[in-house]
Image 1 (cartoon, protein in one colour):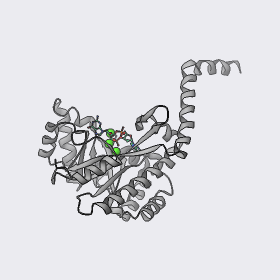
Image 2 (tube, rainbow, N blue to C red):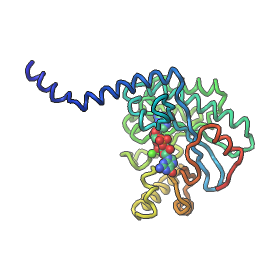
Image 3 (spheres, rainbow, N blue to C red):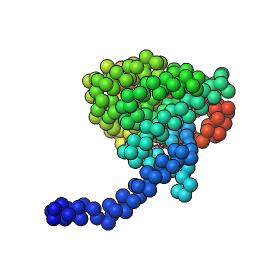
Length: 281
Ligand code: C2E
Ligand code: CA
Ligand code: CA
Ligand code: CA
């Protein structure tokens, strides 16, 4: 008992006490925020390098915290994942994004708008009723599944093996497109990639950012784009911030770009103004 007491003392130091309190507070806040609808979706345009116009948007979650202001997902998604609250939150995101997309498609039928991209967390992906929930959301929002893209990280697919393939096949069956997020940062089993029903590889921002200063990153980008095309997929470059990056990606035949060069993630009212203005790259 003495040894246990001692090790407890060592493990539970002052810093941990402080961070446990912060975590607990954050968890309480998160639960309240879901009830009080403090969450908001921002939308970042994804632009076609072929047509030069907006092809779609990625929905990105924000938390309008009553005391701490607008919080980016990095500040709360990890805890939402840990506590399982991400499942409820993720459902809300998916519903909201589908409803928004349907509204835009109805308002702007002539626009080049094709896809709403939604991030799916690992926990969400593993929910046994995922397919059912998605079907319900599509039905109640009236969104055609071929306007929905789900972004999943490679790690989620690799870690879930054959079950992941089964889920992906069901999503494909529904007409939903799958995009591999942050491609190049996980340990993808390249050998199996071709057997997954995937339509898009999203090149991680960490390769795009230094691409004009470090040749190795440029090489990796070229390889990912080539790989995507060989497998019959398309490539999206995220975090594109400069004209120079854009020009190179166009040269490499990358299909789509997303990043501050074109637009930051926008609240819905600003996003709709952008759709209406229909700017060209
Ligand atoms: P992600 O899916 O890789 O999303 C792209 C992130 O890059 C976004 O950060 C976006 O604001 C940022 N970004 C886009 N263009 C640029 C650029 O040109 N320069 C720079 N520096 N950054 C750029 P954000 O919104 O903070 O989201 C961070 C991550 O949080 C996302 O990374 C995604 O993994 C996660 N996330 C966001 N929304 C959701 C959600 O609804 N559900 C889940 N499960 N995860 C989400
Ligand atoms: Ca994403
Ligand atoms: Ca990403
Ligand atoms: Ca990323």
